[in-house]
Image (cartoon, rainbow, N blue to C red; front, side):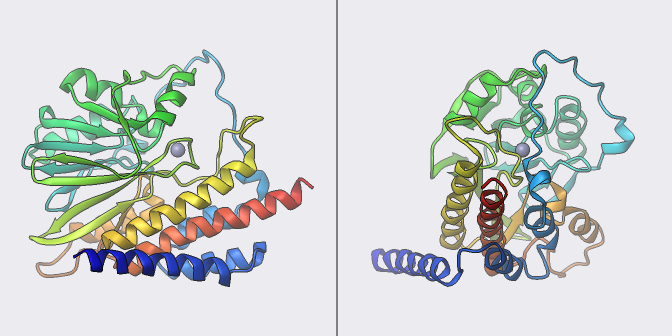
Length: 333
Ligand SMILES: [Zn+2]
């Protein structure tokens, strides 16, 4: 057993070294590497992340202190019905934001909580519609402290006594946010590689800073008609960084790229063959959920894409960060 593990580690180190050596450090080379890694499956994320102009990538409107919150958008524009995706994994998202429920022998783990205006409709009522009891939510993993993923956490904490998990860096970020949505009370702090076991199920969380200072990416064991698979979620994708004098934009691109390398190794090691995301455009949720709705018995699950494809997805986001760093450096010389 020990031998197998050390061989696996050695191989992934060699793989990373080879990749780093074979991609010349130019914008074009990193974009080409990202495009190759994206293949035909991951073109949406490639286009939004790698082809963005620097102005788009750097648009980061600072939240206005004590601003009056805008009224919630019209429900007809965002509501989506919940759906079972694996035996133990459920989609609870809205049209442009995803949340997930992992069911275990001892309760439910929710990953991401949408906005304060949609948590009740999509997560609480969504679970009920699926025949699951929201009172059984034991843990809530918030991938990162932005209102589209953290906004519903307080309700789940208050109403069901669920434990909220975030990294220390994103708890700190939460404390600094001045927008008026309800923040969760500080609860459990996630460290890199930490496991969360509930009943028969163990998730592994990795700290992948970049999108936010403490973004969490997660590995989740799932089953499809009893057959085991492993899902991976890259916890934060866009380059809409919060920059500061001590942590300028360059720092965040570099941090993001290093985190992608880190999670890519975890995805390889875990043999993750399913990609899920917290925005539907990133994992192709709209097409996949539609395909699941009409899936014939014995037909493949559209979410199972193979380990090579999941590894390429994470490789792509890292290469896009490297390309964007060089673009940014050239533009600000
Ligand atoms: Zn975000």
